[in-house]
Length: 347
Ligand code: G6D
Picture 1 (tube, rainbow, N blue to C red):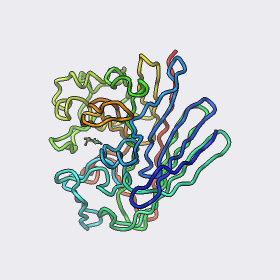
Picture 2 (tube, rainbow, N blue to C red):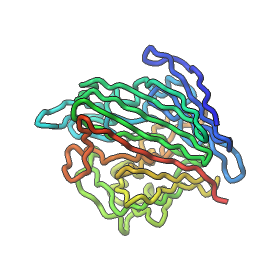
Picture 3 (spheres, protein in one colour):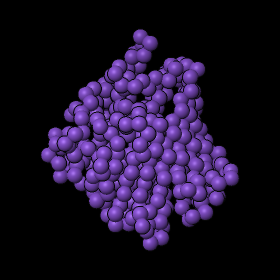
Picture 4 (spheres, helix red, strand yellow):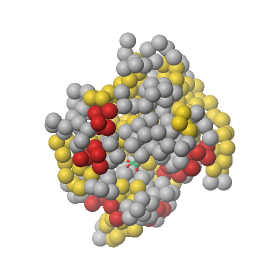
């Protein structure tokens, strides 16, 4: 197990470093102190070929140029907040409307777009990095001086364990996630439409025309949203279901997780499997419907469906829906969240 640090350039007038975690099986993860980006995850296929299985750029500037949140941590609040404002303790807070009239993924200067402090971790059987950031009161319009930590740990069981921790000196909102786009074919040889997903969820959130939850929970029964027995992601592209069509032919939806059943993504051709276990209430399944053409990602032409996101988190726009689990972090409380991504191969 080892951690290697390398300075790779400058952004926001600060030096940016990449941290590469390696375990004893040849698995590697590279992450950046800019936005806690996971820029590469290299794992074997069924023939032992180790290839990258996440979308990431070789050039640092491309992350800012084509901000699609490749690999980024997202916060203070993942997802959209309707009207870019919310009320808390009888006070209204106005946030930047960085997507039409709504607030998306913590705003332009969200946690994806700041430089984090990094501390390398090397303890028996794991290698990792702990990123920390101080978000001052009123940063992007949110109340409270907030201390956040995001820790990536790689184990010799080919697990990436991501844990989040936050404290605040004033009631605020906090709903963090990681926005990696997975493509298990390896080096983006194919898109993700032939990937199959098993997800134990019996309901998902209905979205309106601005991709904001309406507040309704839709039953997955007899729809392309039923992943309980496994389903190919292409079903959402071929579907005539209005919610699949709404988001650009695919999925871009929060699914409510039933208990602690792991999520399982598989690519049958390579044999690679990703199992996701989380303590979060929901996962946003996003099949990269908005990835534009016109640029290249590690030499591969960008295009729709080149990666799939499994963004474990609280429910988007929860602050405007009292029947959603709360994402309020109260003064003096601690925010904890943990998601484990385990990589394996089918024989
Ligand atoms: C699009 O609607 C999707 C979001 O869910 C995603 O996070 C973003 O692209 C990158 O806005």
